[in-house]
Image (cartoon, rainbow, N blue to C red; front, top):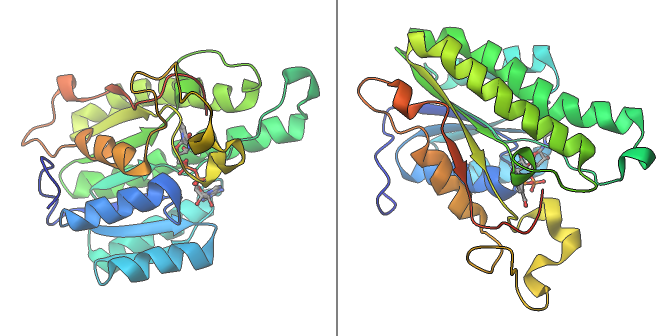
Length: 252
Ligand SMILES: NC(=O)c1ccc[n+]([C@@H]2O[C@H](COP(=O)([O-])OP(=O)(O)OC[C@H]3O[C@@H](n4cnc5c(N)ncnc54)[C@H](O)[C@@H]3O)[C@@H](O)[C@H]2O)c1
C-alpha cells in the first residue's frame, strides 16, 4: 500500500484515458491499494499494456468516452468482469490550443464532446451500478484552466469550467444515494498531453508554481485517491471538493 493512502480492497474502479499519463498513474496506484481496475481508452495498445503490467486485478476495454453506447458497454464490462462498480475517474480528455478567433467550431465541439459530454455520459452510466453497490465515488479531472482564464484555452477551458459546474450539480443530486462527486484541478503535469511544451527543460523553472516545478502524474493520482476516500457514510463535507495539484503558471 502507498504511504498514507487508505486501502481500496474490494472496490472496483473505471479509469478513463488510463492508457497513459495521469490515468495510467491512477490505475497503477488504485491497483496497488487493492482495487480492481478497468482501464479504458481509445489507445488500445497502451491500454492493454497498462492492464497487463498491473496484472490480474486489471482489465482493459476500448472505450470512446464521447459515445453513450460506449459507456453502456464499458460499465457492463466492468460489472461482468468484477461484479460491481464503486469508483469512476473521468480522466480522459483532449487539448488543442488556439485563439478563439482562429479555433474552428468543429474543434471546439470536439473538445466539449470528449471533455464534458464524456463525463456527463459517464455519470449517467454509473449511477445504477453504484446504487447497487451501496454508494460510490466519481472523480472528475478538471484543470487549472477550469479555475481561471488562460489565453488560447477557449475550448479546453470551457470544457473544464463546465466539468466543474457539472460536478457541483451531480454531487447535490447523487449525494442521496451515497455517491460523492469531486473535482481535481491539476496544474501543469508532465504527461504526453503537454510533451510539446518541453516543460522539464523550461529555463528558470516554473516561477508561477508554488513548488517552482511541473507536477508528476503520480501526484494527481494520489489526489484522485484522496478525493474519494471510502468514508463509512458519505457526507456533504466530503463531496464537491476542489483540489488543486502543484503548478500555477499555466495549463492545461
Ligand atoms: N497534463 C497536464 O498538464 C494537465 C493539466 C491539467 C489537467 N489535465 C487533465 O488531466 C487528465 C489526464 O490528462 P493527461 O495529462 O494524462 O493527458 P494524456 O494525453 O497523456 O492522457 C489522456 C488520455 O485520454 C485518452 N483519450 C483521449 N480522448 C479519448 C476518448 N474520446 N475516449 C477515451 N479516451 C480518450 C488518450 O488516449 C490518453 O490516453 C485530462 O483530463 C487532462 O485534461 C492535464
